[in-house]
Image 1 (cartoon, rainbow, N blue to C red):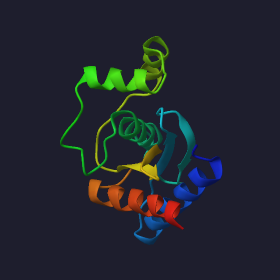
Image 2 (cartoon, one colour; image 1 turned 135 degrees about the horizontal axis):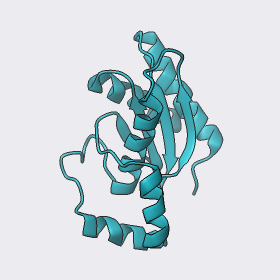
Image 3 (spheres, rainbow, N blue to C red; image 1 turned 180 degrees about the vertical axis):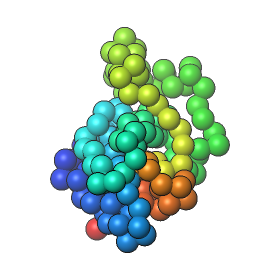
Length: 145
């Protein structure tokens, strides 16, 4: 069960709508379960580096299984690599991805789940942490509609 581009774009639109209603300008990234970017949207006026941070937050959430509920319990690297192997990704391939996209475990990112399976994650950057989390939650809510 894969995350579709249409679903990712709807999540970004929902998160950006929440940001607009609260007077914020943010970047929102949606990645698949392997931390690979599906869609990215940067609002006009969002901070310059917010797109990279949004993607890094989403990738960190997807690959470490972290979201705000588990943020205080990061996985050790051995567990992280075991999960990579479980997902049939060769560590050599995965290492290249890590150099391209930093992995950040931070607020403003949430796992996207369906039927108990992790499909990916959404990451938001460019606002105070509580507001980023609120925007990410609004984006995540689009999956239940």
